[in-house]
Image (cartoon, rainbow, N blue to C red):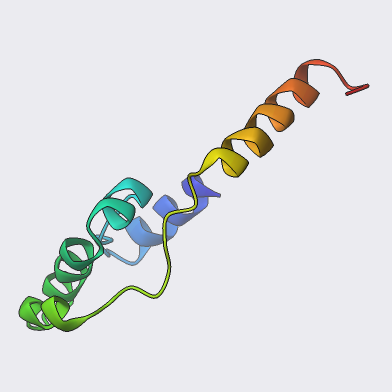
Length: 77
């Protein structure tokens, strides 16, 4: 899917605004400012935007990830 998106952007001569999950999770205002700036919109607007979500990297998330990784190695688990 990533390759298809890259091809689509290239065909339409679009330089995508790239924001990683880590950027968004660590500082949502800076990530939003980057996006706004890339769209030609005043990036200072981002200072007034509060996030209504939180990073979901807690112990429960790690347990799910561990179970998933274990099941990939042992189809019976």
